[in-house]
Length: 133
Figure 1 (cartoon, one colour):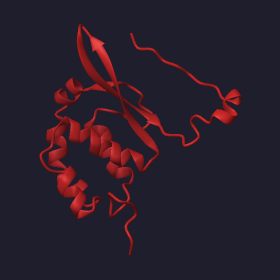
Figure 2 (cartoon, rainbow, N blue to C red):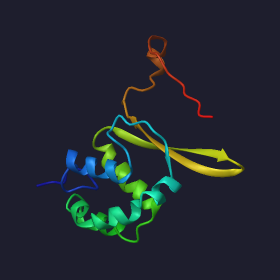
Figure 3 (tube, rainbow, N blue to C red):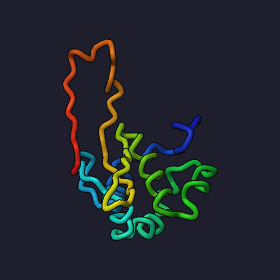
């Protein structure tokens, strides 16, 4: 039986997404709060993902699991989160912010509408811009 995609032997399900959302301190897929590496450290994201490696490993193809589920750090955890979210048409986007002279990456979830920007039909679409201060 062919693989579902290049990363997963079993497509991620709602249980896996809910586990990761909980680990990252988010309530659900519609939670648009920003989070940073500091939030991830405060929530022990790396440790919590490490504690759930066996659960996550069952989704990945073995060769991909060896790459993404070893030597975990915050960056790899974001990558894992993004990979699982993609199956549900969501993205975890990162934005660089400058706070007190330090550059900090902040992340949030967005729904990945495949028809987000289509220049042919842009005049019919409404957009919302948000600026964080």
